[in-house]
Image 1 (cartoon, one colour):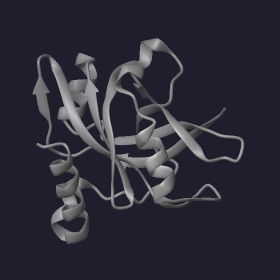
Image 2: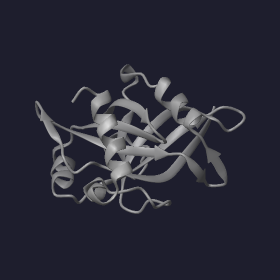
Image 3: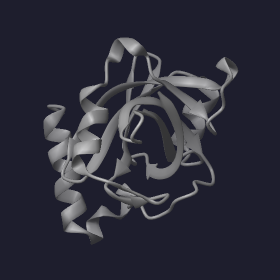
Length: 162
């Protein structure tokens, strides 16, 4: 399997919940389109979502770090709504929870494994990043100006039964 570190941006949703001592946030992880010279489809997103296993404890890292010191949480769930891949992130590191609450850490980037043809097969990690390579994800706080994104996010929330 090949590893693709994909500096694609999504954003954390403005609202969050506390579960025990953990901070739980929803995020847009990825969306269809041409990124880094490859066209990603809904089928690719579905492959990433269907291969997700909570027991794998996919880490939330800082800036795609490979160090366990920079693991700040874990991915709880993944789903596809429309042409977007969403995830629920559980942040466990106190200093990062505070940065997320203050809006200082809100952009995410993913990396995933691929098969020999370059098709995504499994998420590897989600990172909190300051400077994602690709831009264009909609801020969830700006959804009131884009009804299509608002409806997609509402579908995502309903899929989680929240």
